[in-house]
Amino acid sequence: MQQQLIQQLSQRVGIPPDKAEAAINTVVGYLKEHLPGPVGSQLDKLISGEEGQGGVLSQAAQSLGGMFGKK
Image 1 (cartoon, rainbow, N blue to C red):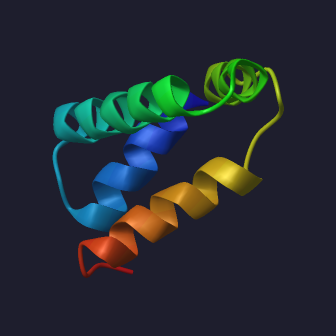
Image 2: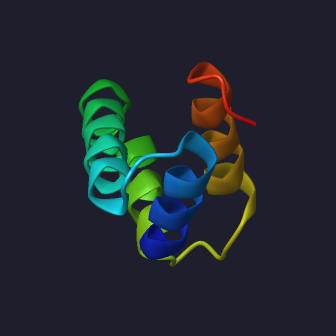
């Protein structure tokens, strides 16, 4: 799941995969610090692929692309 998110973010925003991975890790780390414990653990499950594919992470990548002027 994380590799799919990295690839999607890289393509949509137009940045190299290593930069996309760093961005994802930064955002996930920030969210885990600021969300209640149970929500943070659900985020870990989403990123690791335990919660299934698609949906939330795809929307997050699209939103980040929109923030940087790409769609």
